[in-house]
Image (cartoon, rainbow, N blue to C red; front, side):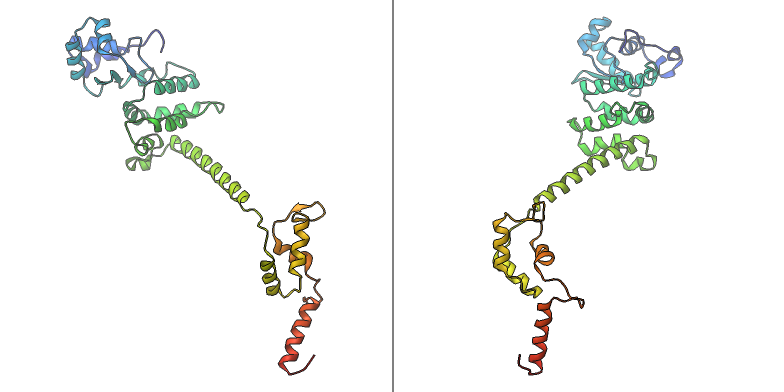
Length: 290
């Protein structure tokens, strides 16, 4: 953040703030103006550092942090992380460039991954949508980065975290936003890429299998085409199972039999061998000897 932070004058007419004890007000003002502040309002500051900067005792600081309403801030005593709830609200407009805002938030998130980001996402859903819409096409959308980055946060399951940034929580199904749409589009694009890759791999895996003489024989009998199976097999075995003038790898030996090795059809649609075959069957049925 910059070397200065705005303090809006209406804070002195805020009934929640004015009801705080003077040392609590002092601590709150410190937490919105110290050098550690981040745009999100989520940042790390230890009790020791607060005590050193404010001259308040640690006990006094602990009491103040517990007394200040949760609507104003939360403090994780174990990790030394604070979330000043309205800090982003009052500082969102201070940075003019959307790309700078998004980069600042992303750096903040990468630096401090904490459950406070869940509440932040819910609280500032509209602001995040506006910001994501304004980020230039050359930049990766803020919502996409936050969505995929949050998957690595250990404090929540991926499903729960994802629901926050994709707005898929059952309570918010009727309030879908551009954040959801953009992230959905990104996921669909990714799924399509994966599907295309699978198809390519599947296509590559369908390699031509050289048939046996027996397989060729059975197929030729089924087609009643009088093709010599052994001659067919050894012909292509000798040339590496290549076909055509350009010597392309064979894709289907059955197609080669039909298109190249079977005799041309007569006008009646049957080969001469087939006509002779059926003629012999008819003669046998009538007891006529060949």
